Length: 377
Image 1: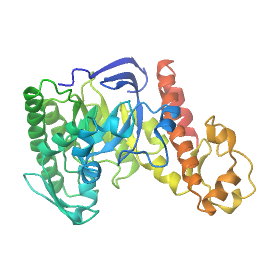
Image 2: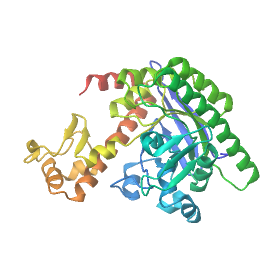
Image 3: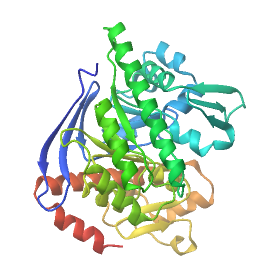
Image 4: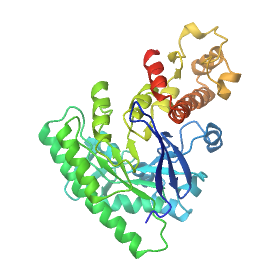
Protein backbone atom coordinates (compact mmCIF):
# COMPACT_ATOMS: atom_id res chain seq x y z
CA UNK A 1 0.00 0.00 0.00
CA UNK A 2 1.31 3.40 -1.03
CA UNK A 3 4.80 1.93 -1.34
CA UNK A 4 5.87 4.94 -3.40
CA UNK A 5 4.75 7.46 -0.76
CA UNK A 6 7.21 8.92 1.71
CA UNK A 7 7.60 12.22 3.54
CA UNK A 8 10.90 13.59 4.75
CA UNK A 9 11.72 16.79 6.62
CA UNK A 10 14.96 18.38 5.44
CA UNK A 11 15.08 21.59 7.51
CA UNK A 12 13.30 23.31 10.39
CA UNK A 13 13.10 26.99 11.25
CA UNK A 14 14.60 27.75 14.65
CA UNK A 15 12.11 30.45 15.65
CA UNK A 16 8.82 28.96 14.41
CA UNK A 17 7.33 25.56 13.57
CA UNK A 18 7.98 26.04 9.85
CA UNK A 19 9.67 23.12 8.12
CA UNK A 20 11.02 22.22 4.71
CA UNK A 21 10.19 18.80 3.29
CA UNK A 22 9.70 16.49 0.34
CA UNK A 23 6.65 14.38 -0.45
CA UNK A 24 7.54 11.35 -2.55
CA UNK A 25 4.52 10.12 -4.52
CA UNK A 26 3.97 7.66 -7.41
CA UNK A 27 3.86 10.58 -9.86
CA UNK A 28 6.75 12.61 -8.55
CA UNK A 29 8.29 14.52 -5.67
CA UNK A 30 6.56 17.57 -4.19
CA UNK A 31 8.57 20.20 -2.35
CA UNK A 32 6.83 21.34 0.83
CA UNK A 33 5.41 23.62 2.11
CA UNK A 34 3.26 23.55 -1.02
CA UNK A 35 0.09 25.06 -2.40
CA UNK A 36 -2.18 22.85 -4.52
CA UNK A 37 -4.24 24.70 -7.16
CA UNK A 38 -7.80 23.42 -7.13
CA UNK A 39 -8.89 21.48 -10.21
CA UNK A 40 -12.28 20.36 -8.91
CA UNK A 41 -13.58 18.72 -12.11
CA UNK A 42 -10.22 17.67 -13.51
CA UNK A 43 -9.25 21.17 -14.60
CA UNK A 44 -7.87 24.23 -12.85
CA UNK A 45 -10.34 26.73 -14.27
CA UNK A 46 -8.97 29.00 -17.02
CA UNK A 47 -5.58 27.27 -17.16
CA UNK A 48 -4.22 24.50 -19.36
CA UNK A 49 -1.95 21.79 -18.03
CA UNK A 50 0.88 23.47 -19.97
CA UNK A 51 0.19 26.64 -17.99
CA UNK A 52 0.33 24.72 -14.71
CA UNK A 53 3.67 23.19 -15.63
CA UNK A 54 5.04 26.62 -16.62
CA UNK A 55 3.87 27.96 -13.27
CA UNK A 56 5.60 25.15 -11.39
CA UNK A 57 2.54 23.56 -9.83
CA UNK A 58 3.99 20.44 -8.24
CA UNK A 59 0.62 18.97 -7.28
CA UNK A 60 -3.03 19.82 -7.97
CA UNK A 61 -6.32 18.88 -6.35
CA UNK A 62 -9.35 17.09 -7.77
CA UNK A 63 -12.69 16.34 -6.14
CA UNK A 64 -14.31 12.92 -5.72
CA UNK A 65 -17.87 14.25 -5.53
CA UNK A 66 -17.67 16.20 -8.79
CA UNK A 67 -15.67 13.62 -10.75
CA UNK A 68 -17.99 10.84 -9.60
CA UNK A 69 -21.01 12.75 -10.90
CA UNK A 70 -19.35 13.84 -14.14
CA UNK A 71 -17.86 12.14 -16.13
CA UNK A 72 -17.96 9.22 -13.66
CA UNK A 73 -15.10 7.34 -12.04
CA UNK A 74 -15.56 4.28 -14.29
CA UNK A 75 -14.98 6.40 -17.38
CA UNK A 76 -11.84 7.83 -15.77
CA UNK A 77 -10.70 4.36 -14.71
CA UNK A 78 -11.14 3.06 -18.26
CA UNK A 79 -9.02 5.97 -19.54
CA UNK A 80 -6.15 4.84 -17.31
CA UNK A 81 -6.88 7.01 -14.28
CA UNK A 82 -7.20 10.72 -13.67
CA UNK A 83 -3.58 11.52 -14.55
CA UNK A 84 -3.92 10.10 -18.06
CA UNK A 85 -7.51 11.28 -18.49
CA UNK A 86 -6.57 14.93 -17.93
CA UNK A 87 -3.03 14.77 -19.32
CA UNK A 88 -1.34 15.62 -16.02
CA UNK A 89 1.65 13.33 -15.33
CA UNK A 90 2.29 14.86 -11.90
CA UNK A 91 0.88 14.30 -8.40
CA UNK A 92 -2.84 14.69 -7.67
CA UNK A 93 -4.66 14.85 -4.35
CA UNK A 94 -8.38 14.11 -4.36
CA UNK A 95 -10.73 15.47 -1.73
CA UNK A 96 -13.45 13.06 -0.56
CA UNK A 97 -16.41 15.33 -1.24
CA UNK A 98 -17.33 15.69 2.43
CA UNK A 99 -17.12 19.47 2.30
CA UNK A 100 -19.28 19.61 -0.84
CA UNK A 101 -21.96 17.54 0.90
CA UNK A 102 -21.87 19.95 3.85
CA UNK A 103 -22.15 22.98 1.60
CA UNK A 104 -25.10 21.41 -0.27
CA UNK A 105 -26.93 20.32 2.88
CA UNK A 106 -30.36 20.88 1.40
CA UNK A 107 -29.50 18.12 -1.08
CA UNK A 108 -28.10 15.58 1.41
CA UNK A 109 -28.69 13.58 4.59
CA UNK A 110 -25.99 12.22 6.88
CA UNK A 111 -26.48 8.81 8.51
CA UNK A 112 -24.26 6.36 10.36
CA UNK A 113 -23.77 4.45 7.12
CA UNK A 114 -22.71 7.45 5.07
CA UNK A 115 -24.24 10.33 3.13
CA UNK A 116 -27.34 10.20 1.00
CA UNK A 117 -27.45 13.08 -1.45
CA UNK A 118 -29.03 14.35 -4.62
CA UNK A 119 -26.89 15.53 -7.50
CA UNK A 120 -26.73 19.29 -7.89
CA UNK A 121 -26.65 18.61 -11.65
CA UNK A 122 -29.88 16.67 -12.20
CA UNK A 123 -31.37 15.82 -8.80
CA UNK A 124 -30.58 12.10 -9.07
CA UNK A 125 -30.07 10.17 -5.82
CA UNK A 126 -26.65 8.87 -4.72
CA UNK A 127 -24.96 7.45 -1.64
CA UNK A 128 -21.40 7.84 -0.35
CA UNK A 129 -20.15 5.47 2.31
CA UNK A 130 -16.60 5.71 3.70
CA UNK A 131 -15.77 2.59 1.69
CA UNK A 132 -17.35 3.93 -1.51
CA UNK A 133 -15.35 7.14 -1.35
CA UNK A 134 -12.08 5.18 -1.12
CA UNK A 135 -13.24 2.89 -3.94
CA UNK A 136 -13.88 5.87 -6.21
CA UNK A 137 -10.52 7.44 -5.42
CA UNK A 138 -8.74 4.15 -6.12
CA UNK A 139 -10.44 4.18 -9.53
CA UNK A 140 -9.25 7.77 -10.08
CA UNK A 141 -5.72 6.67 -9.19
CA UNK A 142 -4.87 9.78 -7.15
CA UNK A 143 -1.56 9.99 -5.30
CA UNK A 144 -3.21 11.17 -2.09
CA UNK A 145 -6.76 10.25 -1.07
CA UNK A 146 -8.92 11.71 1.67
CA UNK A 147 -11.37 9.87 3.92
CA UNK A 148 -15.04 10.81 4.10
CA UNK A 149 -15.65 13.16 7.01
CA UNK A 150 -18.43 15.29 8.46
CA UNK A 151 -17.51 18.97 8.44
CA UNK A 152 -19.73 21.15 10.63
CA UNK A 153 -20.21 24.86 9.91
CA UNK A 154 -19.14 27.62 12.29
CA UNK A 155 -20.62 28.19 14.76
CA UNK A 156 -21.89 24.75 15.79
CA UNK A 157 -22.91 23.53 19.22
CA UNK A 158 -20.50 21.39 21.21
CA UNK A 159 -22.98 18.53 20.91
CA UNK A 160 -23.10 18.77 17.10
CA UNK A 161 -19.32 19.12 16.87
CA UNK A 162 -18.76 16.14 19.15
CA UNK A 163 -21.18 14.04 17.11
CA UNK A 164 -19.33 14.96 13.89
CA UNK A 165 -15.92 14.19 15.41
CA UNK A 166 -17.02 10.75 16.56
CA UNK A 167 -18.84 9.94 13.32
CA UNK A 168 -15.75 11.01 11.36
CA UNK A 169 -13.69 8.70 13.57
CA UNK A 170 -15.92 5.71 12.90
CA UNK A 171 -15.93 6.46 9.19
CA UNK A 172 -12.13 6.78 9.27
CA UNK A 173 -11.80 3.28 10.72
CA UNK A 174 -14.06 1.88 8.01
CA UNK A 175 -12.17 3.74 5.27
CA UNK A 176 -8.80 2.49 6.51
CA UNK A 177 -10.07 -1.09 6.78
CA UNK A 178 -11.45 -1.01 3.23
CA UNK A 179 -8.27 0.60 1.89
CA UNK A 180 -6.09 -2.04 3.56
CA UNK A 181 -8.29 -4.96 2.49
CA UNK A 182 -8.58 -3.75 -1.11
CA UNK A 183 -4.83 -3.32 -1.48
CA UNK A 184 -4.32 -6.77 0.09
CA UNK A 185 -6.76 -8.41 -2.32
CA UNK A 186 -5.20 -6.68 -5.32
CA UNK A 187 -1.40 -6.80 -4.98
CA UNK A 188 -1.09 -5.22 -8.43
CA UNK A 189 -2.87 -2.12 -7.14
CA UNK A 190 -0.61 0.88 -6.59
CA UNK A 191 -2.84 2.57 -4.05
CA UNK A 192 -2.28 6.22 -3.30
CA UNK A 193 -1.64 7.36 0.25
CA UNK A 194 -4.69 7.73 2.50
CA UNK A 195 -4.94 10.77 4.81
CA UNK A 196 -7.08 11.05 7.92
CA UNK A 197 -8.99 14.26 8.64
CA UNK A 198 -9.13 15.94 12.04
CA UNK A 199 -12.35 17.72 12.94
CA UNK A 200 -13.50 19.53 16.07
CA UNK A 201 -14.35 23.10 15.00
CA UNK A 202 -12.58 25.52 17.42
CA UNK A 203 -12.90 23.17 20.43
CA UNK A 204 -9.41 22.16 21.55
CA UNK A 205 -10.58 19.15 23.54
CA UNK A 206 -12.43 17.76 20.53
CA UNK A 207 -9.53 18.56 18.20
CA UNK A 208 -7.25 16.59 20.53
CA UNK A 209 -9.71 13.69 20.67
CA UNK A 210 -9.94 13.61 16.87
CA UNK A 211 -6.17 13.88 16.38
CA UNK A 212 -5.50 11.05 18.81
CA UNK A 213 -8.10 8.80 17.20
CA UNK A 214 -6.77 9.43 13.69
CA UNK A 215 -3.24 8.58 14.80
CA UNK A 216 -4.44 5.44 16.54
CA UNK A 217 -6.08 4.30 13.29
CA UNK A 218 -2.92 5.26 11.40
CA UNK A 219 -2.70 7.21 8.15
CA UNK A 220 0.06 8.33 5.79
CA UNK A 221 -0.72 11.98 6.56
CA UNK A 222 -3.19 14.11 8.46
CA UNK A 223 -5.45 16.94 7.35
CA UNK A 224 -6.88 19.74 9.43
CA UNK A 225 -10.51 19.97 8.33
CA UNK A 226 -13.38 22.23 9.31
CA UNK A 227 -11.48 25.53 9.18
CA UNK A 228 -12.08 28.63 7.07
CA UNK A 229 -15.82 28.00 7.37
CA UNK A 230 -16.72 31.29 9.04
CA UNK A 231 -14.62 31.35 12.21
CA UNK A 232 -12.50 34.43 13.06
CA UNK A 233 -9.07 34.50 11.44
CA UNK A 234 -7.37 34.39 14.83
CA UNK A 235 -9.28 31.19 15.62
CA UNK A 236 -8.11 29.62 12.35
CA UNK A 237 -4.50 30.32 13.27
CA UNK A 238 -4.89 29.17 16.87
CA UNK A 239 -6.60 25.90 15.92
CA UNK A 240 -4.05 25.24 13.17
CA UNK A 241 -1.17 25.73 15.59
CA UNK A 242 -2.76 23.67 18.33
CA UNK A 243 -3.71 20.79 16.04
CA UNK A 244 -0.44 20.70 14.10
CA UNK A 245 1.34 20.44 17.43
CA UNK A 246 -0.55 17.21 18.17
CA UNK A 247 0.60 15.49 14.97
CA UNK A 248 3.70 13.38 14.22
CA UNK A 249 6.86 15.20 13.22
CA UNK A 250 7.62 12.71 10.45
CA UNK A 251 4.29 12.92 8.59
CA UNK A 252 2.72 15.62 6.39
CA UNK A 253 0.10 18.05 7.70
CA UNK A 254 -2.48 19.45 5.32
CA UNK A 255 -4.70 22.45 6.08
CA UNK A 256 -7.78 22.14 3.88
CA UNK A 257 -9.34 25.11 2.11
CA UNK A 258 -7.08 27.89 3.45
CA UNK A 259 -6.60 30.65 2.36
CA UNK A 260 -5.04 34.05 1.46
CA UNK A 261 -1.30 34.36 0.74
CA UNK A 262 -0.77 35.73 4.25
CA UNK A 263 -2.74 32.79 5.68
CA UNK A 264 -0.30 30.43 3.99
CA UNK A 265 2.71 32.16 5.54
CA UNK A 266 1.09 32.32 8.99
CA UNK A 267 0.09 28.66 8.94
CA UNK A 268 3.46 27.46 7.67
CA UNK A 269 4.83 29.19 10.76
CA UNK A 270 2.43 27.01 12.76
CA UNK A 271 3.69 23.76 11.25
CA UNK A 272 1.52 23.14 8.17
CA UNK A 273 2.99 21.54 5.02
CA UNK A 274 0.18 21.46 2.43
CA UNK A 275 -2.56 23.89 1.41
CA UNK A 276 -5.34 24.22 -1.14
CA UNK A 277 -7.88 26.95 -1.79
CA UNK A 278 -10.15 28.12 -4.62
CA UNK A 279 -9.36 31.74 -3.78
CA UNK A 280 -6.68 32.47 -6.42
CA UNK A 281 -8.79 31.06 -9.26
CA UNK A 282 -12.24 32.18 -8.08
CA UNK A 283 -11.07 35.69 -7.26
CA UNK A 284 -9.35 35.94 -10.64
CA UNK A 285 -12.58 35.14 -12.48
CA UNK A 286 -14.19 37.95 -10.50
CA UNK A 287 -11.52 40.50 -11.48
CA UNK A 288 -9.66 40.41 -8.17
CA UNK A 289 -5.90 39.91 -8.30
CA UNK A 290 -3.34 39.40 -5.53
CA UNK A 291 -0.24 41.58 -5.59
CA UNK A 292 2.63 42.60 -3.37
CA UNK A 293 0.69 45.85 -2.83
CA UNK A 294 -2.48 44.07 -1.72
CA UNK A 295 -5.56 42.97 -3.64
CA UNK A 296 -6.62 44.90 -6.75
CA UNK A 297 -10.22 45.01 -8.01
CA UNK A 298 -8.93 45.38 -11.55
CA UNK A 299 -12.32 46.19 -13.09
CA UNK A 300 -12.26 49.60 -11.36
CA UNK A 301 -12.33 52.74 -13.51
CA UNK A 302 -9.10 53.96 -11.90
CA UNK A 303 -7.19 51.37 -13.95
CA UNK A 304 -8.61 52.39 -17.35
CA UNK A 305 -5.43 54.34 -18.22
CA UNK A 306 -2.99 52.48 -15.99
CA UNK A 307 -0.27 51.10 -18.25
CA UNK A 308 1.67 49.44 -15.48
CA UNK A 309 1.69 45.67 -14.78
CA UNK A 310 -0.71 44.05 -12.32
CA UNK A 311 2.17 43.88 -9.85
CA UNK A 312 5.45 45.77 -10.45
CA UNK A 313 7.24 43.25 -8.23
CA UNK A 314 5.93 40.20 -10.09
CA UNK A 315 7.97 38.28 -12.69
CA UNK A 316 5.11 36.23 -14.14
CA UNK A 317 4.48 36.17 -17.91
CA UNK A 318 1.30 38.23 -17.52
CA UNK A 319 3.00 41.03 -15.60
CA UNK A 320 5.88 41.07 -18.07
CA UNK A 321 3.58 41.52 -21.08
CA UNK A 322 0.17 42.99 -20.22
CA UNK A 323 -1.01 46.17 -18.54
CA UNK A 324 -3.66 46.84 -15.93
CA UNK A 325 -5.54 48.94 -18.48
CA UNK A 326 -5.65 46.08 -20.98
CA UNK A 327 -6.73 43.46 -18.46
CA UNK A 328 -9.42 45.82 -17.13
CA UNK A 329 -10.63 46.30 -20.71
CA UNK A 330 -10.89 42.52 -21.15
CA UNK A 331 -13.03 42.19 -18.04
CA UNK A 332 -15.30 45.09 -19.03
CA UNK A 333 -15.65 43.60 -22.54
CA UNK A 334 -16.30 40.14 -21.00
CA UNK A 335 -13.52 38.55 -22.97
CA UNK A 336 -12.51 35.07 -21.77
CA UNK A 337 -8.85 36.08 -21.91
CA UNK A 338 -9.49 38.25 -18.86
CA UNK A 339 -10.03 35.24 -16.60
CA UNK A 340 -7.09 33.39 -18.16
CA UNK A 341 -4.61 36.22 -17.55
CA UNK A 342 -5.86 37.03 -14.04
CA UNK A 343 -5.86 33.35 -13.05
CA UNK A 344 -2.37 32.80 -14.43
CA UNK A 345 -1.10 35.74 -12.38
CA UNK A 346 -2.91 34.74 -9.18
CA UNK A 347 -1.74 31.14 -9.29
CA UNK A 348 1.80 32.36 -9.99
CA UNK A 349 1.53 34.70 -7.00
CA UNK A 350 0.46 31.85 -4.70
CA UNK A 351 3.09 29.42 -5.96
CA UNK A 352 5.76 32.12 -5.80
CA UNK A 353 4.77 32.84 -2.20
CA UNK A 354 5.40 29.16 -1.43
CA UNK A 355 8.76 29.28 -3.24
CA UNK A 356 9.79 32.26 -1.15
CA UNK A 357 8.66 30.46 2.01
CA UNK A 358 10.77 27.40 1.14
CA UNK A 359 13.79 29.55 0.29
CA UNK A 360 13.48 31.42 3.59
CA UNK A 361 13.24 28.21 5.62
CA UNK A 362 16.19 26.72 3.77
CA UNK A 363 18.26 29.86 4.39
CA UNK A 364 17.34 29.96 8.07
CA UNK A 365 15.61 33.29 7.52
CA UNK A 366 11.93 32.41 7.77
CA UNK A 367 11.27 34.49 10.91
CA UNK A 368 12.50 37.59 9.06
CA UNK A 369 10.33 36.71 6.05
CA UNK A 370 7.31 36.29 8.35
CA UNK A 371 7.93 39.69 9.92
CA UNK A 372 8.01 41.35 6.49
CA UNK A 373 4.74 39.69 5.49
CA UNK A 374 3.08 40.84 8.72
CA UNK A 375 4.29 44.38 8.12
CA UNK A 376 3.01 44.43 4.55
CA UNK A 377 -0.40 45.38 3.08
